[in-house]
Length: 403
Image (tube, rainbow, N blue to C red; front, top):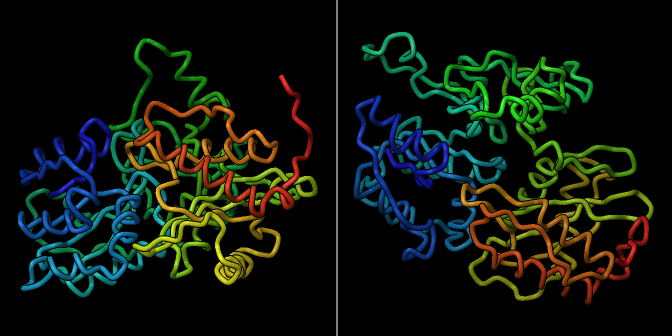
């Protein structure tokens, strides 16, 4: 088992240390990055050299590899001579996995890895201690640890994080805590009690525990802070953080759904969407996009043809009301935490400041950021976009007071 995570994060200590020890499996510890240590083939080399059966990583890592190696040459090289035929599953966690990245790597696993190998997205948090939703490779092992029966796992649904795992009661509710219909967007909450792996309080701070997780829904549900839906087949779709919902002319859209539409374009490797202030509609979706090419254009403003194509995909998949207000392109400009979560709030602050002409205004960057220099790259790209195009397009709903 190879888990490409910091050992201090919940996926790290759970699947680098505890799970392999409990299962009697070999675990691979790795210090490095998916690209640049020394190249985009590092992960696949580890899989081949150590005969790894199961791998855990974040979608961010796959996007980085895809950007540096768009033709998957390193993967195919590692697969030569059946070098990856023992690989049974590639598990993704830490952030939402857009369908395009799941489909791309599922094709590789189907062609080069073990029969039936799957890309499996799963969703959890530090507080849950184990996956809240996902797909188990051998679900029956939970009933009989000694069983040798080979079972067929559930089918994946690209864009979904699987089904609720045993012990977790996953529900979707509106802002009043009332359950919504299947397929409807809402707040993702958990019924009480949680699975045995879940938290029961915060260390010496019961009041903070209640305010942070239970107060919003009057103690009935545990608030995960995520937004999404459960489809008719019971698959959980985590679309975004609750505070990443964009309100466009009284229509609510999840950033995840818009990002999914953008990354369905073959030229886009990664996208992040935030709301940009708009004097007419309140906010509009604004995209940051990294192209799937090693030779990335320098300009922050995408060419008209690309933007028109991406805009068309958003309108087709979501609706005209969700049309992008603008798009910045660039490499190494989307800030993330060390566990791979996109820091949309930082980009949102930079964009809001830019609308008011405050390009150099300081923004709050959390200590968990992987590379603070990325924030300055984003700041420079936003400034370039506004100087070339955006200043005439984006007007704030109200003037900021100069303090």
